[in-house]
Length: 342
Image (cartoon, rainbow, N blue to C red; front, side, top):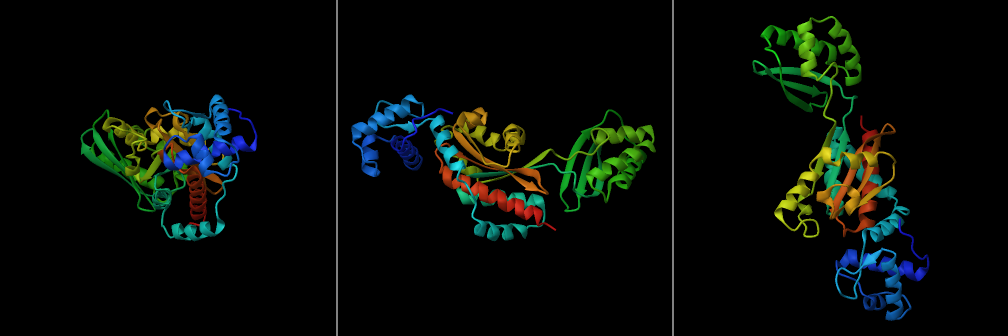
């Protein structure tokens, strides 16, 4: 991070430039600072301070005027100060947590949490929930779509359905289809994925080579895998913002990026490395289409293990203090609700 001269006047000027720009969206001048603040200094003195901040790479002039706006480094310095003071209000946390706990399943909780954080910040809310091997499989189905194409359906104890279409290198007879389906349900139905993995290995050894071949094609190997992550989104229309994208093609790329768990995965993985709030500004996100955005994110937990990541996406000129506190509060709420689930 860029180092700055640690004196009260410099800190106050930098803070005022950033906060005024975030609120007003215009370059901030020395005259504005003198008029709007309690800093006891002349415009000439303030200009000298601003020149020093510009030399340190924390603010810059977007055009030939006396006004300055923060650079990404300046925003990063400001955000780091906010992060050191972020904390959620316990009273509000308990109230909202009780509301979220009324939701029946973890996916429903995550979907509701995405809407909650989007409404709290008036920005775009994302919640990514990684795959879990703790769900109980209620039933599997193999449905013939053609001689060499099947639809594989997995239904869990919450009636959540996941399916995939598979193309086979061989023709499947009705007898083989029914035999394989019976074996899969005998091995997996009523058990968690972790338990089912062990049972399936035993059942496979007792099955014919044809059944084994079909199981490996249907399940992509000798194990059952769910989708790696599910991404819940809310408030995507709030990304229609001139500061994020000013043409239709760019907007499409932005919307596509926040809809793709694969695109966001590296960023979310970084958030799982610690329980802290993470703020990514502009190019720090590492996604070209989101270079005009900032993302505030934090992981949430179940049974003391990372259960997913909540994030807010918006323009770089966002109310960082409010958003950071909202994300901190909401992830704590979701953590509490997940761990009180029956």
